[in-house]
Image 1 (cartoon, rainbow, N blue to C red):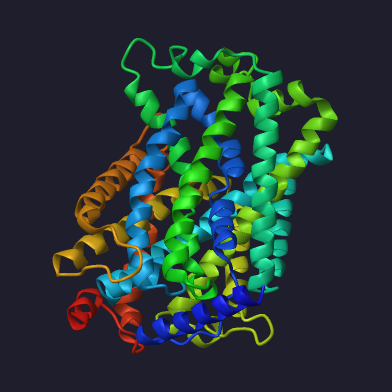
Image 2 (image 1 turned 120 degrees about the vertical axis):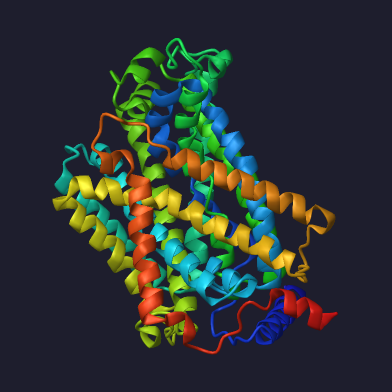
Length: 497
């Protein structure tokens, strides 16, 4: 025990020295272990929340073979995680994508990456808490009305904010508890469905049930693959709390990879168990069964057992919101520490007792709560805004992937503990190709019968949010404030050489 404490103390001293060399001093509570850091990424990715939220959509769009989208998205995001691992290993700074973009490219690029990522996280939090509404309604045996969904979503935001304000140790323990509950729940429920309540043969995962009509299956699979894309991010949250994790240069790249391995594996397992337990696949594909997960759980576990499963699902939702909120609060803190946003003094202040960014956490609760509340009165507008959640994340990711290529072209050779060596350029280019393809697939209009703003909702939200960010940057010139280093990744390498 004493040896372990001494090792932690040595790592913390080394981490502080590395951070000081990067131009920062940190007052965070650096107590989050590599497993707790991984748990934060895992609960953000949340296999249960991801699969349960989009299962019906995926099956209706592409039939059972939609499960292969998890493999495709998992492999693509693994490449992105490798790129991120090199960057965070050299720049283990709180806030993740924003400081990485700042050091790889420069202040303007960092401003836009942080802006897009922040709004993607705000809308993701709103989407997750709203997605919990139907499960809560089933749990309490009430009707899933817009009022109930809105109120329950606001309660979840408040609960998450209170827990996050409790400090890094509480966040780490909550993330670990959520991870354990979710993984055990996924294994127990999935194992039970596969062994005792399997209805469909394993070959079902290759059966399209003719969702493509008489044409090619590819368009149907590409539409259904949005389910996989929705579930395959969250690993970047490991880097958002870099200044709260000892030996961050080693621990965080490892935690990111673990999030992909275990998180995507669990997602595919949960999806497979649900697919093979569906009594009538044709009714699910046609929409006749509107809630296939509810039908599967009720059929397998009965009214009482299915509610017990929903309790585990709700733990997953709460853990997911906690991790998302922690991620965006550290981003806001990092933004504010560099004086890149209005209210920097308030947003960059750490609470004396808990050493967490209190002001940033409050904003991380208020903005999603406002989106939820406004959405109650403007349901169509809410659906359009929430569409930004996933595409915004992928756009922000690609800004780091492109930033890494830019830095490499200028001579950057990663100097952290985690390096790809000769594979760096191929992995970086493949990650770019995957990300661009995923963004095009998400933005592709597929509902010509709908109003244009719904058919092009992802593009519309990107233009609006991106346009506001550019206008803020041009007229407010926030990127010119502060003295934090920027665009020095290649220079640091040359200086070291």
